[in-house]
Length: 196
Image (cartoon, rainbow, N blue to C red; front, side):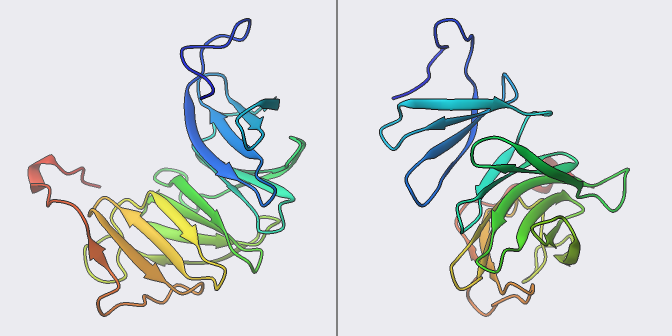
């Protein structure tokens, strides 16, 4: 175990997200201190670096060279040793877009779950916008406040959202549909759901 209420001389530790690279190095966001912490596979402290904003979610690219972090409304790209390489704005509408989940594909694409406006946006590794898919709804291929993303080695994109479900898409955004969307939770009464 690593962390707890705080480390001597450092203060509180509030973990947000975790990612592991191909060598077993563990990266943890510390939301309380706006930092990313590097640990070895046995959770021994290696290093840490400050971030400009509190990172929400992180992902390691398949090459193991870069760590990407979401912090609304930006994506930050770091080397795995903590050097900030670049950052880019993920919102197309400055009044409503909020990013959350992030994942990297074998193609080098960076996938970002946009909690609002209920889409997945895809960028190149240098931040160039490529495409988006989704839109608000509970139907196949529609999204309701997407939160989590994962990308398989074959570039299948797995998405979780507020509909208590997991959906599968191709890397270009086509729903794999017909039984591949699963609702694993209970229905939430409409009065308790957040609206737009």
